Length: 366
Image (cartoon, rainbow, N blue to C red; front, side, top):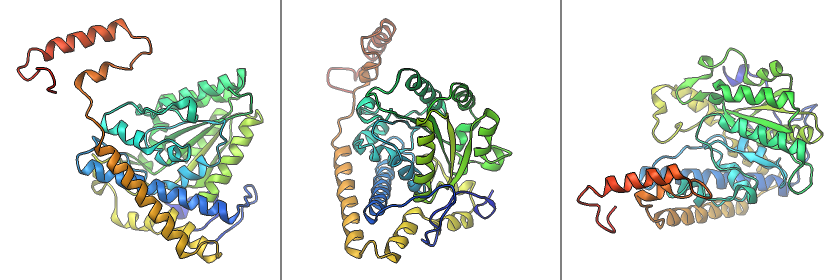
């Protein structure tokens, strides 16, 4: 399944040319376009730092978003403050757009905490590492919004993020069905980066992913996932539809994972170098930069300032991660339940007794 044979909504070509679509009009100011560019650059810089820190032994794992910046930033900027997003584990760009401190993202993969941001404060749920389960969580939340209203009384919608591999999970199909039957105000946003770890789309599905929505009774649309303007316009339209009470929409952002699935993966074992090079030419940041320059919306001083901001953010992240204390072995039993739990307490005591049998288990040694 290649881009040349795939039809999707596109508003900005890989060459940076602005085009129109009859169903998804969007008119952004120069300031808004520059803001989208900044968002993508900062997301990529944090992501690059995450990969580097893992290679240096500072993180246990890191799932890179490289190549998916437009899908994440475009969809995230379509959200209103009162909307609620349920991510998987790769939505670093969405997290930044929801004002989540990137140090909390990296702390999760360092094993220091389980996320640490307040989902209710940012309307951005904690990362979900179980593939596809967040689609059910998001659907249940959306059903609650439809029944009881949003927490602040405003009309709101819910967004569930997942990858193409998650669509093979039963949880996602169940979420589709419940959302359709109950007209839940939810947008299912699938970042189809074409590889579920090492399995290509051809081994996952016989039809384009967005067409699956038809079988459940709601619309699906495929968008150029490397086009931040198209991702913004399509997602904004789907969210507005949800807020009007017209039910769910499946948005398939057709993009490409430029890096590894995670830092434990070697994509050279299952991907063709020529294919990777083809998608490098469709880089989402480069195409928006080309458009900004061509239209006279940004000069070299702007790009230099954004790059400097990214470097400053990366420095803060790097220094913050290295300053994080290593949690002790007993920390895994903390913050599991708000009010404690007898079984967790029993497991903690058993583990403490087991550690006490080792010679190194004296006070202060981990």
